[in-house]
Amino acid sequence: MSFQLGLASLNQTPLDWKGNLSRILKALQWGRAQQVSLLATQELSLTGYGCEDFFKAAWVYEKSFHILETEILPQTKGIALSIGLPLLWNNKAYNALCLMHNQHIMGFYVKQTLAKEGVYYEPRWFHAWEKEKIQTLSRGRKKYPIGEILFEIHDTRIGFEICEDAWQSCRPLARYAQKGVQYVINTSASHFEMGKYEEKKRLIQQSAQRYKVPYAYVNALGNEAGKLVYEGDRWIAYPNGRIQEEQRFSSQDVAHMLVLSKESRKSKIQIPLSIYEECTQALSLALHDYHQKSEVKGGFVLSLSGGSDSAMCAVLVSEMRRRYRPQKSIQSLLLSLYQGTENSSAQTAHQARKLAEEIGNTHITWSVQEEVLSYKKKVEELIRRKLSWEKDSLALENLQARSRVAGLWLLANLRDALLLNTGNRSELSMGYITTDGDMAGSLAPLGGLSKAFIQNYLRWAEEELGYKSLREIRKYPPTAELLPPRFQQQDEKELMPYQTLEKIEELFFLNKKSPSEIERELFGEQEKKIYLPRFLANFRKSQWKRERMAAAFSMDKFNIDPKTWGRYPILMGKIDESYS
Image (cartoon, rainbow, N blue to C red):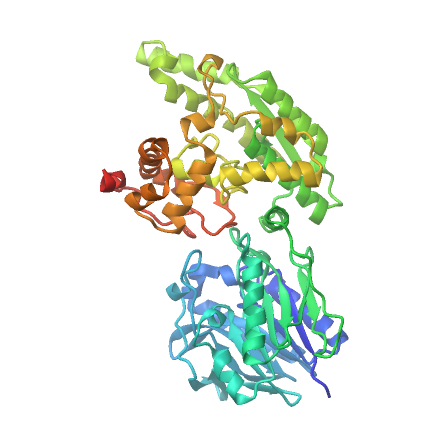
């Protein structure tokens, strides 16, 4: 019997035992129909990758093995299946995969290199397996090999790597190649990052060409646990340079790929996506899964200000509906509100309305000036003086932002909907966002994107997706509209040019440069003597705000979410003094 490989990316949810099992069995059903010899699923496919500190609970390991033995193993008659799961051995926890064939457990391969950079914290939960080591796992009277194992299916020798294993120079594949391996499969949970796709493709092709063995890759799919998005990419590369791949960002909860024979000329190659199309597909999938898995029924509520951030949020919900929920009307899916004060302009109200009309969602325009004046009057009576813009500007600005929130939450609660936070990474890095004001919301779709990227994205969305009303929004200088018109408030005047801010962010957060090193890479006295000190001072004082940020998706090479990437102290010294 010839060997036939199948790959299945599953849209799993942490500890969704019934749902995860159902998707595994659904994939198995497809594999049988396609006469697959071996069906491979992604890393930690049984539990979900994002269980976090549940991986510290012994019952999770016991539950996983019980489901493996009693629910999955009996379904493997006539087919081989690899399942990722957490595993206890000698009282230590490991990230492993189990290969089953014809209702027998053949053994467990264990991850050797744990991901620990950026959003990954695997050493918090797991131990790394020693290279080349093979031991015995005992469970009752049964004993199974565990470690760096080569498996035989239909006279075909198969080896595995798990995600990070492949990125090391001393990797299992280097040893497999000397032992006559015929296929190597990487089971992965590698989160989406703009621009990372081509890097992965190079790794997969180079693996096959250097070690002269077909190299397959299967990744997780969807917004699994809330903040990381997985694109469900499935590939196989051959030593001759040919590559077969399947479409990413599937709307199905189980996405398959039947690996074609080495001789086949029908290998699929997907057309590369622009970074903006990648972003749209990833965030559309993220929003769809977050909405579905959070079990809300009423769609989304959005404060549509007429500015660029809320405009991008509205476009993303529109694209999510078009790509993943076409049966759901946009009127019922998105409620947007323009909430003006005496400082709001007719222009931004017009821009918000035109975009909502173009999208077709339900839109409301109302004033919160009455609420602002009510609180202002109460406080003035309490402190026995009038509040003024000259003396109390920050407090009065924040009052407007916070007065908008009660109505938003009320409508979100009444509709059983998710309230979207429109904050972006650049605002969060400098604390240019009002706690309990525009920080309100349970989900921040733009929290991992810079303001400079958002502005470029809107130009692309206007030209490529056809949202013509974005042109007016793009041309209107970004402004919070919290000061009276005479102050001519503009965001870039209060912060700095967005391109400069993006450059400083990358040097500081991603490249870990010191203030003096950043200064040397900046141009002009204004960047060096005004913008950099302003960034450092604002960053230092606003970590407490980032600790309270809504859930945001990791989309770029770095983010500043304290839980997934950017862990900084709430209290810190004046870091700007290091170069003064």
